[in-house]
Length: 406
Ligand SMILES: Nc1ncnc2c1ncn2[C@@H]1O[C@H](COP(=O)(O)OP(=O)(O)OP(=O)(O)O)[C@@H](O)[C@H]1O
Ligand SMILES: [Mg+2]
Image (cartoon, rainbow, N blue to C red; front, side, top):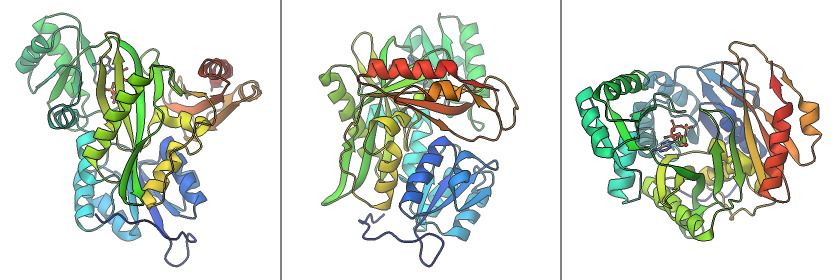
């Protein structure tokens, strides 16, 4: 792919407009769309249900099954976008590869999308090809191999399906019991995306903290440049609930520097243009380990809407369009906490308590506009600025305590 700097922007909907197509229109896509709109770019959003968040801020929208290669190819042929941004993992890889081979620009590139969505390929790429530190691991594709893999890795360990997202199908195994391992293996593969029977078994590490190193590749003055943002630190409570993110991290500089180096190696290894959310563990015994990468803006990076001069979304849009991306300054320490629905099937739910929450100085809210809830669906995010990350987190927690989704 020939990556060039962009010399002009123009008007959407008329003449030779510049078009971005988002494959997946969730809350991250919505912010990407808003940033693109600000630059006069025409935005087309595709998702499997109507009025997904990004569709509310798009010029056109299409509802289709994005795992169906023909459907994806047909919509791309019809629209002929300048840039195709897969916003979720569940997009037909065959379609992306075919489109790229016919000259369409896929972000960051079809191969990177494929590696990043497959835990086994990603581990081989990171640990074996790039030589990055990771958790101990082994692969398995039947129950007996799973027993061997767990014994090799040691206990406790985690079994994860080859393909899935948001923690689906992850099972922790505490002890060397072939019966429990086989049950865990079956659970993992039945929660896999697609029909794969392959899993990765990972050493379960004690976490000190987690980072997302937002790393971006853009067209610089002398070829493609790779830069990192200040690492975002985050912590999860419970299974999916209350993921708190903050920036800047309060961990030592040398740790952050090593995390950034991993970010750069991963992004350069995958190539292409745009931002990558590189997930890194800091373990209690002091190891800095690559975990996984999203070749797109990252949910924990929503904090950058409050903390950085250019948010992760603004960076992504600039980068994929061939525009410059000066290293963004931190404007203020900030924190973010996502808000989840507690029940299923509430249409147009009410986000209550917003008056109390938004009264707090430095607190802001983003409502995603999802048409209906299901349990544990992310519906909104609280952003808070403070004089320190502690203060920002305190404000964000207070704001969240007022909010109820009904
Ligand atoms: N080997 C491990 N040891 C300890 N904790 C882990 C390990 N692997 C994953 N975790 C925990 O589970 C979380 C989710 O894991 P992972 O990122 O692999 O899953 P995912 O399906 O991609 O989820 P998400 O979409 O939320 O990132 C990690 O952020 C970390 O908190
Ligand atoms: Mg993850």
